[in-house]
Length: 128
Image (cartoon, rainbow, N blue to C red; front, side, top):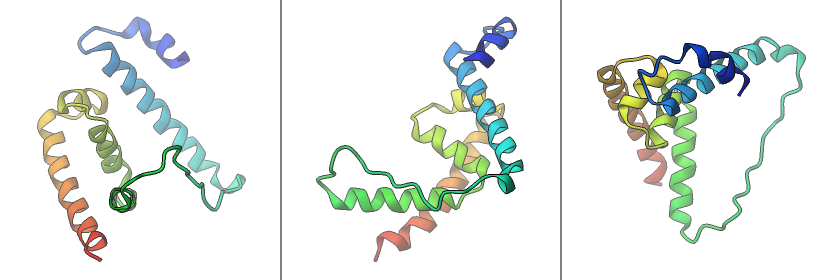
C-alpha cells in the first residue's frame, strides 16, 4: 500500500487503476524476492510448507491434475511462471501486457510456448 501511495502522483490514467496497482504489487514482490535471495545464506529455509485445503475435493482426479499442473509450473523459469499465474487469474492479455510491460503479441507468443511446455510436462504425469 505504501508503494501505491508513493506512486499515486505518477499515475497517468493510461491503464485501469487495477492494472496499475497489480503492476506495482508485482514489482514490489519481485524486488522483495531479489532481496531475500541475496540473504539466502543468512536465513533458515523450511524443508516444506504443508498446504491443507479447507474443503475436501470430491474428485480425486481433479486433485491429481492440480498437483501435476503445480509441479509443472514450478519447473518453469520465474518470468514464465509469473505469466502463467497471471493467465490463471483469468486476466486478459492486454492487462498482463500492462502489468509486465511486454506487448500483447509477445504475451500471446510466450503463452503459446508456455502451454506447450506444460502440455509436454503434464501429459506423462497424468497418463500413469
